[in-house]
Image (cartoon, rainbow, N blue to C red):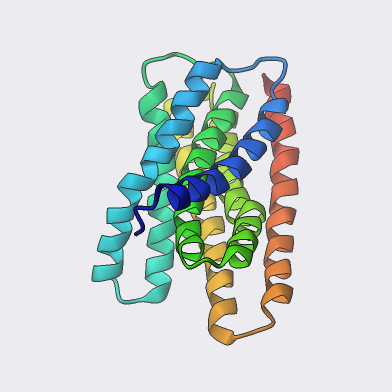
Length: 233
């Protein structure tokens, strides 16, 4: 990895700006009961730090799991669990989860922090090689694809936790496991599609549009559920 501060700075900005734009969009949905900005900042940073913990886990998976399908599923599992734990650790003693929508807001914030650093790492190599057009296309695709994927998968888990907020302990655990399963499943399906495009040599942009179309359909469904949870507040 390069040590050039200019490249590192450009890569970080390229990863950070899309995440901040998405964060601004989702926080607009919570105007009536906004969360403390300082706490949101800490959760966002916790999401960034989550990447540091995921990388060695994924390296371990790559070394010890030979099945590509198994690797993809375990990569997605590691990322979704780490994002959830980042929020759980920050908020465990704050008492700020008191409305159904809170879980979604904090999990989406952590997910966007996670996506910011992950996207920055993907941008370093093309920037280092002077492939500015490639870097731009990579950034646009990850803005529309990967960043949205992290947002939606964590948002789904947040919706499950929000719905079960005032239920009994057993039901809360059930909704947690169901939400995690859905988040991991969506994440894995997206990665399967992307890897399938690369391996088959299909028309890249056409296939990417299909994948993004699938992701946007899921996003619309999540936004409808998000609205339902907001009415529960």
